[in-house]
Image (cartoon, rainbow, N blue to C red; front, side):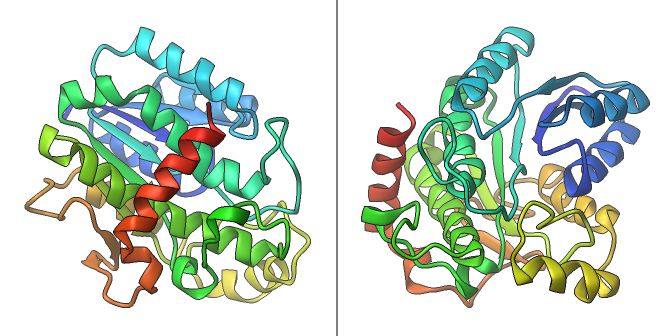
Amino acid sequence: MGERTVIITGASDGIGAAAAAQLAAEGVNVVLIGRSAGKTSTLARRLGVPHHVADFADLRQVRELAATLLDAYPRIDVLANNAGGLFARRTTVDGHDLTLQVNHLAPFLLTGLLRDRLLDAGACVIQTSSASARISGHIDLDDLGNERRWTATKAYGDSKLSNILFTRELHRRYGEQGLHAVAFHPGGIATNFANDTPSRFRFLYHSVARHLMPGPEVGGRRLNWFINGRPGETWLPGNYYENHRVARRLPDQATDAGLARALWDRSETLTM
């Protein structure tokens, strides 16, 4: 375990921070990626691990991050694309909806920029998705940013559905070359999720549901089940998991191979 290098995005807080702490205690070479310089550096010092800072609302920073990671880590065994959230409506400096960019386009770009390094290691790429993919997700390739009918929950659901489709297409393209991709729903976890949106979902999450949910340590263990597991044995690449099982209840779009390919092509265009 100690010889592996595991990169976790969204690692300054919540599930990512909990997973990183658990891995560091096991002696894994874990690398923290966070948006907040203060939070990320504080946690990194406490755990005694390296860290890097990047705001996924700016694709230039994602490109700079990828270059830094390639320079610093000759081997990457796991990329956990865990960063994301439910946000208020906002257009990024790149001209995209904030939720779409942070939850899908930025990890899509980061994974692509690290692809050769990941292939060299026969690495695992793990996407933190959500059951919102089936509850509120329905993708329109001609309106990915939901300019015509934006709501916080729809934007979030679409981005999480995009995570699943990205996982399937990543597996189709590179699975035979040894890259292992999987997406999973960590369940309802009490974190700072939805803090950046004024929607009713924030009120429900923090005033009611959050008090009934387990803490980040549980979510961290669920992420680490994939990180520490063996692809092809513990979990099957190319799939989306809920409760450590391949999810059976999925919208038709989540298994649409043509949509997965088209979304990949569209995402490449948007991140050029």
